Image: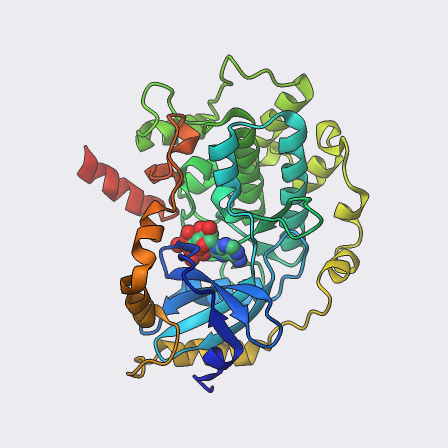
Length: 374
Ligand SMILES: Nc1ncnc2c1ncn2[C@@H]1O[C@H](COP(=O)(O)OP(=O)(O)OP(=O)(O)O)[C@@H](O)[C@H]1O
């Protein structure tokens, strides 16, 4: 693997702050040198810390090709990082849209929910359960004639039904985790858990807060867990939702997985079908090919070889735009921008970007944090 390839193929957008920083690395906006096209590249520092999550993220993301999923382009190595190259979604996170504009009317929330379901349904049809669906992992792409398009991202917790072991671990983001996942009683169906998280996403768009938080003590994870396990939620008095919309949410928030709506049920739901764009559920591969001009999934063996190489101790020296070089750039003036990037947070619970309940990690980690906290 030629480690200078990255620098030849992509170059940075000058003075652009990082798109964001996750548990594993940092995402940056870059240009494809040949075409001038913008791409998002996620840099994950090389070394032994590159774990199974990263491998799964890459393998599962690489096989997906759908208009409502951020398109995976390729992985490359720099001397310091593993670089995951993806389609760039220019409109930021759906989370920020709710932060900025407040809760949505039913029509707008349905518009995004339909696209979310279209993307998740496609993932499931390819054997992939996402397991960390939330507003922060739903990006907006504004490049289609000013019609915002939802793009699911971050497959770091995803599982493939054939390749990976059946999901057992309680991972995800507390406010969005399904009760059977929280119970930690062995294997669960990742698809049903995704349905639950889609319901939480819809609720947050409509109500501007999380459904299972205790109103008087929203940051108390134990209380939230209890309410999730009991399927206990209500609606803010100021939010007037139609009966059909409430029925859909009630069908999704069924603690008993056997009673919970499936993706098929949601696709037939009356509220869901209002103004449903016909192309959303046409034959997925056909509709995908309409949107993504040519799609050749990166060879699985090559992917595996690159990730294996990335696990080796990084070579010294620079020349790349990996994490080490990024430090140098920060000194060059990005730091201030980076600090100012977050919009001011309103009081509403859904707007709390530092809320521990909106960060993905395992439930055990949360429990430990809670112990320390109390
Ligand atoms: N393709 C993309 N287009 C535009 N912005 C992106 C893209 N991918 C990621 N981002 C932005 O960069 C941020 C960091 O992404 P990243 O996937 O590294 O971490 P994360 O989703 O926050 O968390 P983690 O991977 O640790 O669960 C995201 O929150 C998102 O706002």
